[in-house]
Amino acid sequence: MRIRTLGAIALAASVMLAGAAAAETPQRGGVLIQAYVTEVTSMDAHQARAGDSRVMLGPYAAYLVYVDSEGNFLPGLATGWEWESETQLRLDLREGVTFHDGTPFNAEAVAFNVDRIAGRTEPAIVSPGAADMRAVTGIEIVDDLTIRLSFDQVRAGFIQQLGAYWAGMLSPTAIEEMGEGFALAPVSAGPFRVTEYRPGAFVTYERFEDFYGVDEHGEQLPYLDGMRLMILPDNASRAAALQAGDIHLDQRVEAAQVMQLEADPNINIVEIPGFNARWIAFNTGLPPMDNVHVRRAIIHAINPEEVNMALHQGRAAAANQFFSPTSWAHDPDAPWLEYSPEKAREEMALAGFPDGFSFSAAHYGGPWRAEAELIQSQLRRVGIDMQVDAMDLASFSQLYRRDAVYHAGFTGHPMTARDPAHLFHAFHHSTGAFADPSRTTVYDEVIDRALLTLDDAERGAVLSEAFRMVYERAGEAYYIWVPAHRAFRHDVRGYALFSDGTSDCVTCWLAR
Image (cartoon, rainbow, N blue to C red):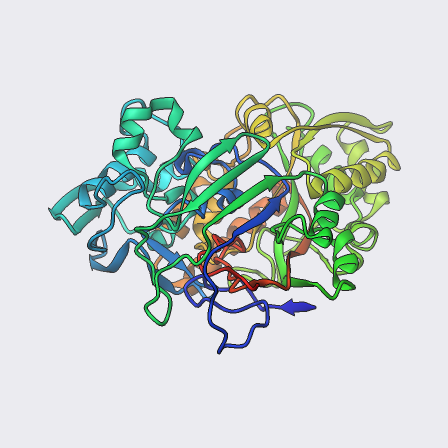
């Protein structure tokens, strides 16, 4: 069965995607086994460096706010919030919450987490949320359950950042006592606690008996006794395991397996159209990628429709900008460099490489493996030699993003309810967590204006200005928007998604 959604589904809504009747009474107990394609860079939520890390972080990490598919804020560890002025935000915190280690959750804990993400605690960490939390210039602990955050200037979209995957509230006691070992046994206040973590293999979670959440009838959540999440990089192997009943849930289904699973009466498929943008990021500080004609040649040589038909069975769409049509920030009039081998060759000549050139590219497996191979063959047709290396996500983050040893990197992002200006900042601002390794500052001014603009229409116009700058610089090669798919067996009930398309399974239960 396919269940098609118009966007991500709010966790708190507890939408029963399995098709179970609303009158069904959830059954308690059981261990849900799920699988995912890749490992996180860190189980320490503050240091994880990819949006889909939430697949592994979400079950244990608790957040101040959650965000539904329409961008509405839902209470988490914060039960209320108010902008007392344009630069002062008050958060009202949930009473009676403890972390998994028994440490009380309170305003002091929030202050510690904000400072740690910002890199202001010792030892200092490097977090993808550092730029957002450094914007907090003052913290006032009003009382145990009230905290006031101050900013030097307006910060549009900041509330949404409190629900970002890296913004989990972690136990200060555990961090201070465990040191570097915290990432192997992280502690938060989410519905499950981590009992065992073997990097690259699996994570096991156990129901947290003192979790604050309840369902619509006031019944304690979660229903499950626990979960086990397996790291299975091979797409076909995950699909086979799901059909065999070895796992209950596949959190990342690629197009090649969708038709196979749709034909199985024991499997449900959830599709989120246009959810993931795929593109090639350029290291513009490393020759020959510092030559705009080289970058234009690469973009002109990529045939998105061939990628769509060959690898996504026509379910995807050619991309021409950072935001897909599912985002309010999408610009329908944005210009782009169309597929044209002739123009690719013209740009090669202008670049001084009429007979072709070579460059290195990296990806971290999953869907990028097949896409990189196909695009490699497309580039070869016009005389461009792309040498591709596959690696895990942690190595990609280190070698491409930090050490800048590759000319290009295959990457992407989900069309989440996260504030568009903040998402664009993460990939394009010189201080962004996932920016061009050259740390170019060419987009900084326009991105800063978008972050300081409260009106969405005005912000959309500013972001459109930024898109045109990317176009003029040929700053990256967008090639496809693909729907996201999740698959689960019919005995799984209560499966619901966060705004970023992942789930912590807080409302899941197993029908027996």
